[in-house]
Image (tube, rainbow, N blue to C red; front, side, top):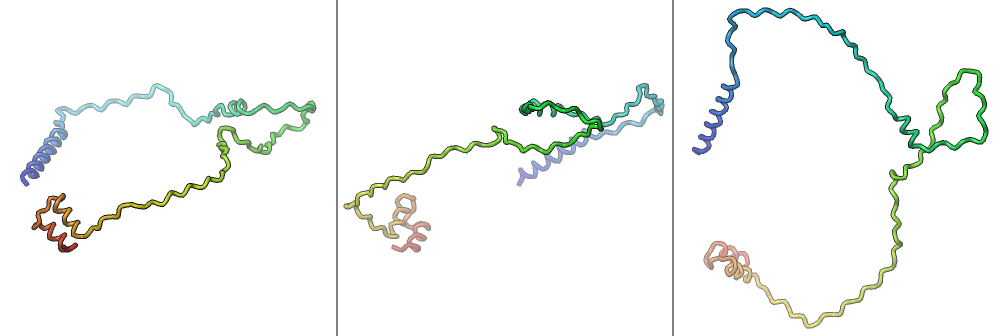
Length: 161
């Protein structure tokens, strides 16, 4: 009880001391301070607009993809009308060899040999008869119960003797 009160008093005192040390009031100025004159910006204003910069994606793709096979027929001259860029149909993607997990070859299951039948065991000693009263005897002997203890009375009442 006293330890809790003492701890609470110490914590409150520490909090008050911390707050008193952190809070301060400036003394009123003795003379009014002059307002500084606004300084004109001598540097020209910069208008920053977002710039879209394309990375080297095209070069990386061209380096990664195999070169197209050269065609046997020479190319014809381009038509006289303005050249329009046509969108090529998308090529079917071939899976990258490292992105497709390889399936392991599994051996085919074989027939398991029959397990031998264990021989019939005979001549095993019979289990000793255990009575419920023996449980109370174990508690008295190994549990350290006194014969007149509450544990022994509860055990004898539950299991009889």
